Image 1 (tube, rainbow, N blue to C red):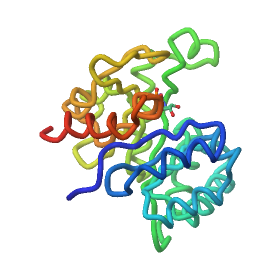
Image 2: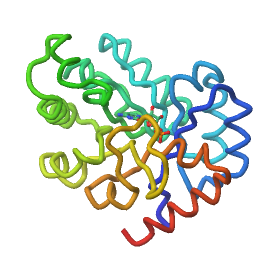
Image 3: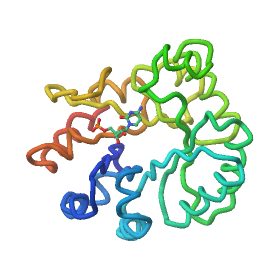
Image 4: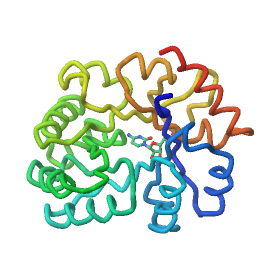
Length: 232
Ligand code: C5P
């Protein structure tokens, strides 16, 4: 069986809470995303341990710095054994190329993807920092730049996926958060898609947090999502 297209966002404030979910999970059933909060609390040792247990880890630290620093940070992440990591496309072409080149010869080269425009930024927020054009224009431009740098894909919203898939071709990875199974409270996510809809629009992987982690029975929630997408 092909490994899961579901990436569970481990947005927990401490290692114990993360582990109480992870103990119920099978590495063949899902991948895991470790973000800034858990990483800052639990550190590289947790990531290493989970990778050693066979979990595919997406290290979501969104590196954004001078090219040399980002390249070295990406190498450090790859050495933890992660499956995927990300950087900010706004760091520019030379930063992205430096990251890509640093990983090129790594014995277990992770998938390297970029964040384009944070979905928390609307038109007004872009204008404030001096970026012209709509959020959609900027996402597309940064996605094309990411592809030019040789990265494997981007994080994007499911709504943007069809346009991006068209522009970037079928090999480019689209990793999509903002997923809510039908009937689940969207909470703070504004524009949500169901798992089926996101895959149908061209997403390769679904980042899913609270619909699984905050469910009364996380394993049941995971299995329900798997069933929903099994024939997409
Ligand atoms: O709980 P929920 O399913 O909303 O979690 C989604 C995860 O995806 C969180 O870790 C969040 O930080 C991340 N994310 C997002 N929107 C983006 C980029 C990342 O929700 N544009």
